Image (cartoon, rainbow, N blue to C red; front, side, top):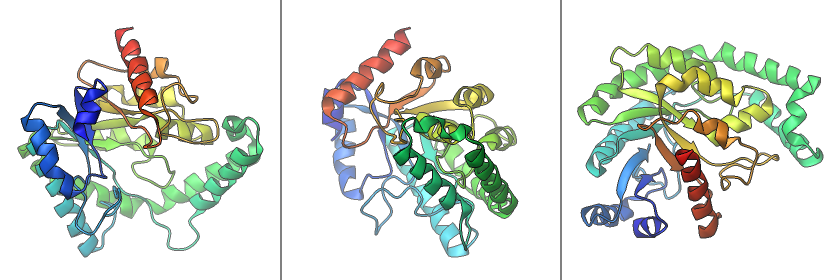
Length: 297
């Protein structure tokens, strides 16, 4: 697996949340032989026992149930151990969600968006329609009203694993998410990261596709969001998003302005192509070349 990535010209790889434990011996052998280096890993990596498919939200730090919470802490610490073992600088981490036990309003919002995607010739512009904007505002208000206990639990959970990450020399990279009910909400990264007692032990991890999906909904401005969080960035998941809401596409196959995104890149940032398994080798290499051209620029 890693040799194939190296043969496409990559010097580093991210080990993501789909890595099964059976792959670990081969990964360690590839690192020992100098085939490639690991820049980042993604919680949970390797996969927890009992999971055979990617499961980054198998356990959430926003859930207060003691059994669930203990599993999140244990599996995150296990992922931090592995990240340190393979030399990763960052563990990309999801921070849970706001839960609705009855009629989650976000489902209605996303279903309405899907209707626009299917019926509208220019679906990226449906967010400007008054009825959709009103629905979006109503849904976001309900999410914020229900959020406090989940957000408090997230902050407490981070407190339980941050020192563990510091001891292993791994930065926690908190990723922006694509659903409106996932945490942090987009305006909360500053509050969260600036409020940590020890700086540089956690950072913001920016996913271009997630930001674009929310921009299509009218929830945020991609550029303004990057401007607000530029000083907190550790790295990027880079993938394009089409007008009908399909993300993890090759660079240039969608609507994202990567020239704009590239203005926020710094030498210490990690840039990770996070593409669909269905993307061809040719389009992976083309995406790599386009990002490298932007880096040179």
